[in-house]
Amino acid sequence: MFGKLLEILRNKSPLIHNITNYVTANDCANILIASGASPIMADEKEEVEEITSICAGLNINLGTIKSHTVPSMLIAGKRSNELNHPVILDPVGVGASNFRNDTANTLLSKLKFTVIRGNLSEIKTLALGRIGSNGVDANKKDEITKENLEETVAFAKGFAKITGSVIAITGGIDVIADEEKAYCIYNGNPMMCTVTGTGCQLSALITAFVSANPLYPLEAAAAAVCAMGIAGEIAYKRLTSIDGNLSYRNYIIDAIYNMTPQTLKEGAKYEVR
Image (cartoon, rainbow, N blue to C red; front, side):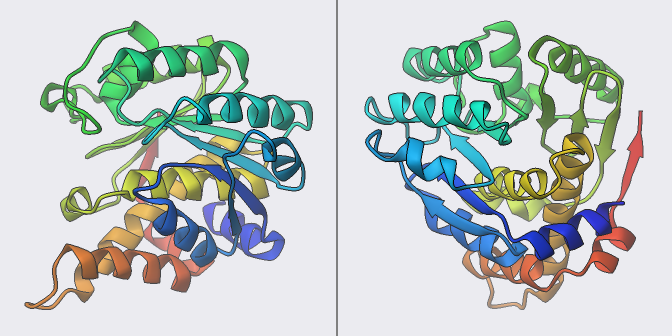
């Protein structure tokens, strides 16, 4: 099914509204174009309602939130909810400051999110109110392993039930779940952690997949995660002895651009729980 979801994405070429962070905005735009979608970046409250109305989906990212962008997120999110457009939340760095925590809680209380994607530390903070101190990175004790996988799956399903959202927890093993079903995904390469913004790119990619396939949010989110992981694997194989993390970033985007439905179908490594 994952290959078919990519094919539909390429055929529909959805326009995606991004209220994202300035560190990775260019990379998010490029990964969307590579996937077959089209990006638009707009965060001024005077225009976000109009912009999001012409788009197929909304990607909200807290990476570099500012006081003026929070009202924009709410305006765009409410309009997207009214139009039944998918809305994705990437709570980057939640737990690192009260401002981020308050913003995330406000968004969760006022908006309906189709998918919430973050590392385990971020998702735990949203669910449990725990304060973290690792910035945008997951706490070492929150790594997803085979030993804690069953516990993580149960946690993701429980939070999905509370929020009504697909919960995408990404790490060494990725867990993508609604309240009844979870995909445990094993694609990717450790070097992806050396590139700033692979998580932000993934959230944009999830928005594209879900916006093109709105009836299958769980499967679309899982397909996006598999696609990104496969891209990381392909990109790693391209590296030469003089390449570093900047080349690796570019190769990941290239791999998404060149990915076929067959590549996604055959390369996806996952189990369903």
